[in-house]
Structures are given as C-alpha cells and as structure tokens.
Image 1: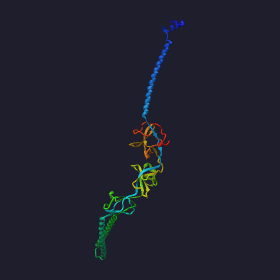
Image 2: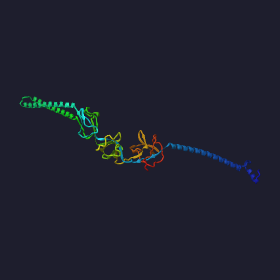
Image 3: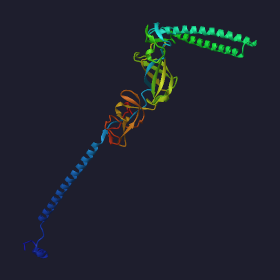
Image 4: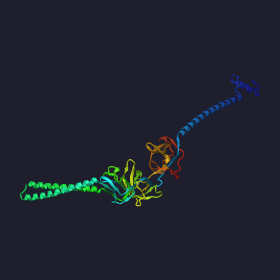
Length: 409
C-alpha cells in the first residue's frame, strides 16, 4: 500500500478494485482526449477536402454549361418608316411612239426629215418610186375602158332586144341573153373600177406623211434603198416618230403599298441629269392587277414636257406620297439573315433563338423597312451567326435600352 495522507481510504480503494488495479490517472485521460480530437480534426480535414473537390467539379460543370450558351446582343424594331414617301425607279417613255413603215413597194426616191427633226402632222417624210404600181395602174385603167365600152354595147343590145320583143321579131330567149350580158358587163366595170381605186391608193402611198406631231428619233433608209411594203420586220421600218410633249413613266409598286395609292395622286419625278430639281406628275392609271412574278402593281405616271427637257428612255425616280402610313417597322441591316428559303431575322423567345421570315419594304442603306413578320416588342439578335439555327439556347447580354434607330425607349 502506497503511503498516503489517509491510509484507511487507500486501503478501502484498493480493496474495491477487482484484481487490485488502480484506474487511469488524469494524465492518461488527457492524452486520450487529445488523440480523439486529433482523429476528429483529421476526419474533418479530409471531409472538407472532398467537399471542396465536389464543389469545384460542380462549378466547372456550371461554367462549361454556361459557356455553351451563346451570348447575343439584341435591339427592338423601330415603329414606322422614317417618312411616308415611296421612291421607286422607272424609265421615261414618249406618250406616243410609232414606227413608220411603207405601204407600197419600190425604191426610195428621196427623204425630207432626219433624226432630231420636229415635224407636224401631215408633213412629207419621204417619197417612194413605184414603177410596178404605176404600170399596173395604167393597165388596169385600160382594162376599165374596155369593159366600159363593152357595157355600152351590152346596154344598147339589151334595149334593142326589148323593143324587138314587143313586135315579136325575136324570141324571148334572145332578150334574156342580152339582159344577162348587160348585167355581166356592169359587174366587170365595177370590178375594174375597184382595181383602179386600189392601185390609186397604192400609188398615193408613194408619199410618206407624219401621222402626228413629234420628233424623228430614227431614220433607217436612204435614197435608192429597196422598200418592201408591210411591217413584218423591224429592218423595214423607215422612220421612228415620238411625241414627247408629254412623258409617261411606268413603275412597279410593291404589293404592300398597292392599297395606299390611287388614280389622280400627285407624284414627283427626279432624274440624275437634273440634280435638285423635280418634275410634277400625275398617277393616271394602274394595271388593277398584281403581277404574280414580281408581286407588284404596274403604275403609269404622266409628266407634262412642253419644253422638251425630258427625253424618252431616261432613268428616273418616282416619288409617291402615301395616302396613309403603312404599318411597318425598321431594323438595322446587320440583323438580316439570307437563307435559301428567303430573308430571315433571329429573335429571342423564351431563352431560345427563333428564325422569322419577313417581308422587306424600302431599303435605307444602314436600315431596312419590314412590312410584315416583326413586332416592335421582338428582341432581334444583332449580327447573328451564319450557323444559327432555330431552337438553340441563347442569353441576352444586356436588354436594349434604345430602339433600332437609336431613339431612347
């Protein structure tokens, strides 16, 4: 027994422990606690490491998934066109434009008018020498004299036979034969008279006259040239005559604007050779039908040209003021996608790209007008990729703060 301050207590404690063993000391219990704490700390460190790796893997997956979604910039279409004027290209034409052909065959004897010359209705343009027609006319007139002489004889014979029949000097058959010969002679005279009149008209065609006031724009013959009657070939055209006191301009109006224009509307015609100057015109008629090939309406604009400043065949621009504004929007040109199916624009809907077909109106260079297919609230993707397909997920970098033309929303 270890000496102790209280011998009885030690003796009792020794007797109470089986086998006489003493319990661990305080120092031993402290070491055990330290060991347990060390194990717990190591386990916590290992758990934290595993959790860090898991979080890093999840973050990497999220980053990879986010990088797979394309980021896009968008704009909103601008409501309405910049102005209510429709400008369309066209070509000027003379109000009357006619090729002049010969009506009789022969050789050109002389011409009196050349290109650029102003002529009046009835002015002599050329003379044709027609010896064959002249000869036929002389022969036909001689034949007419012959049948007219035969008619006189037939008429005399018929009257004599009529008188003889009254005295029963001839048979009724002879009187009837004489009457038939007289009718045949009258028919021959009428036929020859018609031939003479026809050849006289042919002879009158030896002189070619202007059918209306105008300008000679082409002369396709010269003295001694063989002239063939008819208008079967353009090479047989003698002259080309144009009346330019009024100029007409034909333009094709897109179908979307066909209901906004009407007969009687005023228009302005401009030409490059007259910078800054416009010529007043009037919409005189429309085709009243949409061309199925171009989906446009053919329109005629007439312009007074008494001073002759406008020349036929010039390239012109027609400015039409629309009767009422067309419901349309404008978008930048860099949002257009050109596919084999037609023009498309890409918009963002429910976080995915959608390709919309649109109908283009006017082209303003950096912007275009869209008359159908888009709404002002659509998020239109700017500079879309050529490989963009419908249904792919996209994310908007920043919502548009301005409209397509730069105006504040």
